Amino acid sequence: MNKGFDPRNRKKQLIYIGGLYILKKMKQRKKTMVIILLLIIFGGCSIYKMMNSQPKEIISGSYLPDEKDAKKMSKEERRKAAEKEVDESKFTLSIYPEAIFKSGESIGDIYIRNEVENAYPISVQITEDNTGDVIYESGAIQPGYEVTEGQLTKKLAKGKYKCTANVSIYDPETKKYKGQTAAEIEIEVKS
Image (tube, rainbow, N blue to C red):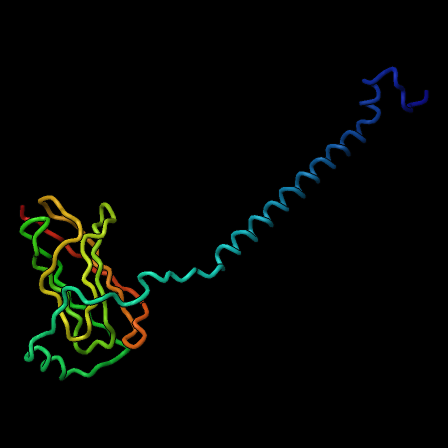
């Protein structure tokens, strides 16, 4: 009996050419695997490109802001601080962990000092932790200057607010942004 191709009986053909059917299935699996492999390679290249792309420099906010609330320290404070040597590799920030305002619109007690021995001017931006809103901006604070009072940039209701003071550090000559540090601070509005 000849087991060749018989167009009248398809069931027998499937049994007879079952090996060929398996080969067709294997070819489909190979195609699927090639497509998956290409997708993985494409995805990997895309992720690599995103990770290694250079961030764009933001021009606004990259320079030291104008002075606002800072005032020069007293002669006695400067004399004591001048005894310490300026070291460009060190940075000391003095900020009270609490700031108190009589109302959400009044000038309040806030204390930030850029020590005389620091080589870099700074600016401080305080953001409310829960909302991310900026509620205070100091303007430029040169070495040897301090902020002892200021006004909130956003009206706040009575209460205590957990915040973060983001301290931006600038090059004294070019006034370009050099880096940032942060400190926790609590803002209290009395009424």
